[in-house]
Length: 398
Image 1 (tube, rainbow, N blue to C red):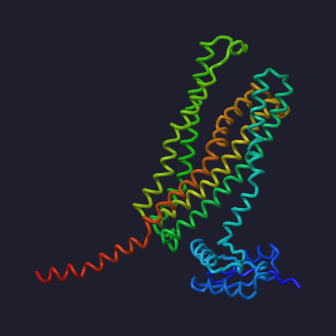
Image 2 (image 1 turned 120 degrees about the vertical axis):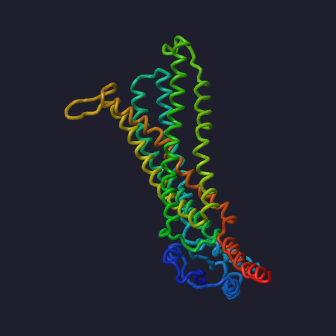
Image 3 (image 1 turned 180 degrees about the horizontal axis):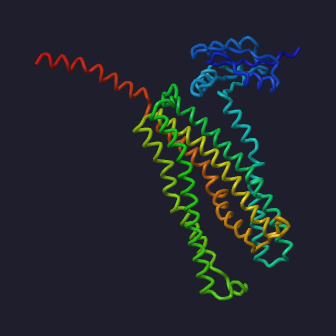
C-alpha cells in the first residue's frame, strides 16, 4: 500500500497561511500538517521527527514547507531544516514567505511568451522601414503598418508584465530591507516619513521628465544632422547617394549615455542621502512612494504611448469623422503626429525605465541597510546615556 503524501507546513506566524494551504492541496498533497508559532530552536526537532518516522522509502512522499511573512526568518529556518537531514533520510524542503517566490516563479514561467510579444512590434516596425527603403509596392507597407499597430498593443501587454514583475521584485527587496534595517513598522503619521512618501511619489515624475527631455534633445540633434546630409549630399532622396548612417547612430548612442547621467544619479544618490540623513524609516517611506507611483506611471505611459502611435497610423489609412474622411496630411493627422512625438518616448523610454528606477532604488537601499540599522542608533543613544552619570560624578568631584 502506497503511503499518503504529507506536507509539513512550518511557520513562525500565528496562523498557517490559507494561500499556502490552497497551493499545497492544488499541488497534490494528501495531508497537510501545519505547525505555527515555531521557534528557530524547534525546527531541527520537527524536521527529524518527520523524516525518521517514515523510513528511506516513505520520505519520498513527504515534504517540508516553510512559510510566514518574514523572509529572513524563513530563510534561516530553511537553512536549519536542510542541515537537520541525514542521507538517506532526506525530503524536499523549500520556503516561500508571503508567496513571493512562487509568484516570481510564475512570472518567470511566462518569459518565453513575453520575449515573443516584445519582439513582435519592433520586427514589424523594422519590416515597414525596410519595405519603404527597398521601394516595394505600397500594399506591402500597408500590411506592415497593420502588423506594427498590433505590435504596439502586444508591446503594451508585455510592458505590463514587466512593470508587474518589477513591482514584485521591489516588494521582495523592500521586505529584505525592512528586516536588515531593523524596522518593525513604518508610521506615516510621522511628518518626516510622510514627507519621504511624497518625495518618493515625485521621483518617478522627475525621472520621467528627464528621460523625455533627453529623447527630445537627441531627436533635435539627429534632425539637424539629417538636414545637413540633405544639403551637403545630393541624390539621397533619389537613392543615388548613400547617407551617413553612422553619424545618426553616434548621436543616439552618445545622447543615451550623456543624457542619462542625471536620471541615473537620482536613482543612486537619493536612497543614500535619505538613508544616512533621515534614517531607515523615512527611506522606507521613499521606497513605498517610488514603487506605487512608478508602477502606475509605467503602466500609464506604456499604454498611452501605444495608443498615440496607433492613432497616427489610423489617420494614415483614413479615419471617418462626422462624415468626412481625414487622411495623411490633414489637420487631425498633424495633431496625431504631435501626439506620437510624445507617445514614442512614453512607450519606448520613460515607461520601461520605471522598471529600472523601482528596482535600482530598492537595491541601493538594501545595500546600505546594514549601515543605517536602527539598532546602531539605539546603541549609540544608550552609550551616551550610560556616560552621563560618569560625567556628573567627575564634575561633582571637582
